[in-house]
Length: 249
Image (cartoon, rainbow, N blue to C red; front, top):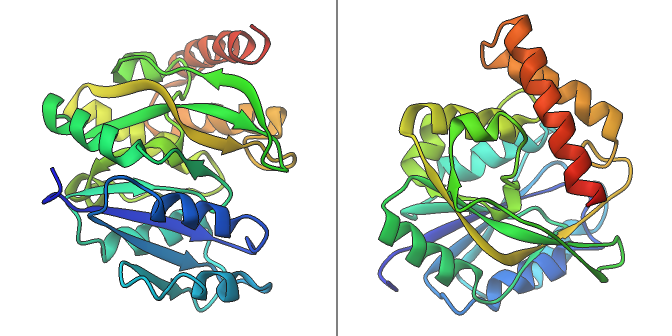
């Protein structure tokens, strides 16, 4: 298992407050054959100084965008230079449990799938765990994912070749959701790991934090992947029901 490398791609924009915790959670992984590629998206704060505190570890490198390009292009730049068999994304304000990579690589090797994700536990902006866990189904299909995106980007792992085949785009929508749907539509089932190996920081005002904005963007995803109006409305109704169950029960 240790002969398999995982490339961790971490986009970062003005993340000085949280990125140290995110990097530390990679360094502390029990699975040690990884590289971390931090993509600095034209930061104007001290994010770079924080990242440099970790670059004595030869597994960690950073690249910088000349101008602010957005999270999708930043992730794509990291994927483009990834050397691992697998790519795992981690946003600069999230963290992993120390066994996340080991468990996920083992699962993907056993199941021989191109994509997987893990359950996540919500933490507030201060990093305090809330005990709220967002589950994920053990079998992830295109049809089921249309009802709501249960794949969080910081919990995903996929074959590097597949990540390069389906680069992210459309930052004005849920760029990750589009990618997962495209991958599942072509390759079939992915797998989910029910353990909350991701500690997800909920930030007010973000795309995911603003529910009305997120809802409009989700409808845009359905249109972007080629669904007609009737199909998009049907999927959106399923998404709305899923969202109510997710946050209130």
